[in-house]
Length: 472
Image 1 (spheres, rainbow, N blue to C red):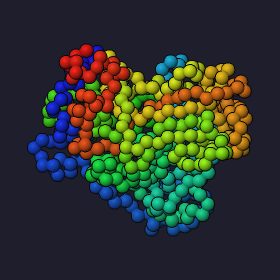
Image 2 (cartoon, rainbow, N blue to C red; image 1 turned 135 degrees about the vertical axis):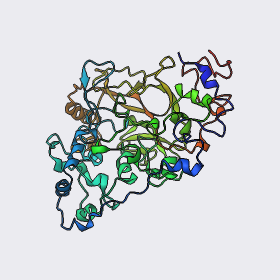
Image 3 (cartoon, helix red, strand yellow; image 1 turned 90 degrees about the vertical axis):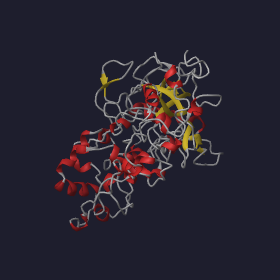
Image 4 (cartoon, one colour; image 1 turned 45 degrees about the horizontal axis):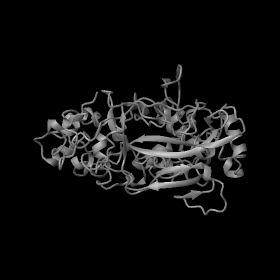
């Protein structure tokens, strides 16, 4: 069982010092500038492609073929989930055998599913023109090299992930270089149909943030690839919206090795508290993030469209800005709702609940964005239904739930009874970006005392360890 007195030892030690691994670790004898300099990534010069790319390109696939002539090993990215949208075979808790899961075949409580909705969803796939099952995943020319490497700020992927009409592909190709934050955030900040919809800690403010918004990217000028280092295009990092374990994850301790802090009494808290818990005191500081999404309200032509409150095609929303995290025990693994799993419509179905508890020695208290939704389910079969939204017969065209759900269920090989309702769902998103400077890390009174942000009883404690003498 976790020892609550360990958390209690934080009192009077954390004020002015911050806790966690993320920034506090520096050699004690070095001046501040020297300590930080060891982490700074200088701007890296890149080969100027303008001199070698002189022709014109009719199609994006032609650009990829040109890239592969000089970079044949770049096709290795086809071995990754960025390309396949499924991960390695993995055991999913509560399910038999191993399965490959990912964006390609999972359900979420935002835009619900990618299956059949290629026209919009594939704008964030690293391929050229994934329209349907005929897309050739074995052809390296179908890999879109530009979306990750272009530096022109003029490249936009349109329907099915093909470049928008009128794109000067040669000009874009001549701009290629090391992936910038803008390249990554083109998709990762806008997943789910808009900025800040899914992630609470990834949005366009991180393109050029102040150090108060993210100390790694603002003060130290990190690029995404400085933490998500990608030899042979094998990009590490784990999104627990589509994964159940952390085998290819990135952690603070990848750079910040022990000892984490100069005061060992603060270090003692690392057995129960994740670095992110104290060093990400809030999220969505500049750009609001979607907190709720109610699909049952969609289709009302009498309501005025407003991207932050209501859209006829999607339903009703609420957004939060400067939000405080909720806290969960997390051991690096999650449970996962799979298509066809039964649910109890009278209770909230958590699609990716984190695993861990106060009794789990591998778990830590983590900060989370919690997203709540109402989405369609089959009232006879008692499972969530993936609707067809875009394209012929999709809900966004017909505004007819029965037909859109029948088409979506067929694409996902799910029987549909013809009867549906809307069930409450939840997704839990652990936070790892928007790391604040150590001066803004949580202090004692943020967690202990009358105004604690922690729900101690929900975390398995008898109460605030300070108030109960440090023990249950």
